[in-house]
Length: 611
Ligand SMILES: Nc1ncnc2c1ncn2[C@@H]1O[C@H](COP(=O)(O)OP(=O)(O)OP(=O)(O)O)[C@@H](O)[C@H]1O
Figure (cartoon, rainbow, N blue to C red):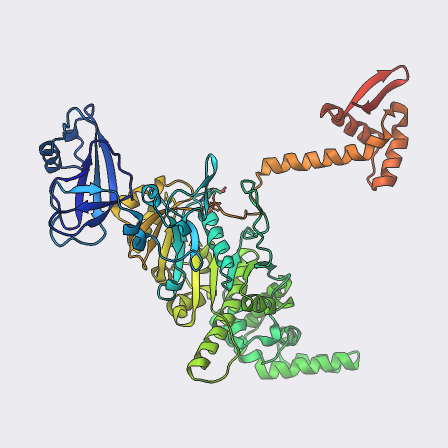
């Protein structure tokens, strides 16, 4: 392998007669006039005599061909392998043409490839095309993971990609981008497994109800038990907002997330909401004010008081009168109704029925707290939750800075799929403002984001710009490729490959490394609860039903035609399921068809019997 053609201080072509190149592999250039240089293959091509080199002028120019000839390559006869190699660090001088090329030893690339120890880092996958260098790799980095390929589970042959979590302190936030089916959710799952291994307090917003870690995939023999490290909580069922703890700002955020608030509605909340209000006291105040406003004027309300049937009704109308006098001028009827409608909507969704204590306790214990609900509920709830927890952490850090005592609140990571729904580009949403604040300031307080989306183009650009490490899976949509091009340091060659990446292969563009790694996410140790194919699920359910029925009838076999009524009654007594003679006969015939039992004709009619 030799350097060929005209070279620069940044890029060279390398030719070989017998070794094919692979994209993203590393090569050492032994330039006689400067120290060994290290470079990465960014393009690779093969030529043979059936494809004349000079008409394939896309990557290789005339100088390369001339140089190949003068170095003794027979370009008309031999198959020749050519690669474009980009130097990792700029050379002092343009590289000497003709310099020898060799493969690096692990020790020469260790610093570049390995960011962290396996104990401290996140073991996320392998760096593709590094198997040659991995041969003499330190034992501690060998056999620490499997990848999952078409042929099944495959032992690790390449250098592991271990993400340095500690450097996140400087480069905190992570983006996970990729089109449908590209391996994005699988990748997110692996990241979360690693966060659990490290006991990092984490909040996951899970609109797809898929981030459960209790199931083991079929390809693993041994179960990895994460059950003590995570908890799934549903908004409105296990967790919610304690109304009494709300401040007026929180309430406005919640109502706004439920449905947009006008200025006038904001004003109504400021005027009508009192500290320590309960849901009932606040909703009653709104309701009574609207009822008074519906009367139209003070005379009519007074008439109501006079004509009240009993003392209680009278008292209630007096209360309405007081509210009317105090608030009618400042709180327009429609705005009060608007608030009441939003409030009831949240109440119906169960938001006010619980609190966030369980999440706080989980985070204090270093657990992964998975919050589930539909996207809208999660938007509403996360706005409140993240504001609350982020400010708790901030207060703690500020108190330490000011040297005053404060209750400990740990640093934590916020993870969400479908991030463009929580922080959309182009319009405001309550969850966006807190995510934006964290993206810009979270680093100071140790609060980090991991945002995954299929549509990076739809994610708020201020936030995207703060995602310093980006995992980019297969992306086909041109607008998203363009966004990725603008937001990462992917080279033109890498960007061109984006639509063709295999599921699970990923470019990791990292500010810590200052370059892009081409990797493959390791096999996950757990699986999503939704992995069962819906058609397999149907088959499974039908089989379970058939097995159940067979179990119920097998002691009663043989069943004669004349016994069907008795059998139906017995079955009802045993199982609580009611059959008519006709429906039982139908079921038994189906069991015959499916091969559970047999049907035979006798002189007394037919009967069903064991096979
Ligand atoms: N690294 C990987 N190794 C092996 N198989 C993978 C890998 N990543 C993904 N897969 C498989 O590919 C399929 C699609 O992956 P995944 O569900 O992660 O896609 P996705 O990008 O999240 O798509 P969507 O956004 O539509 O959910 C899954 O069935 C998963 O098992």
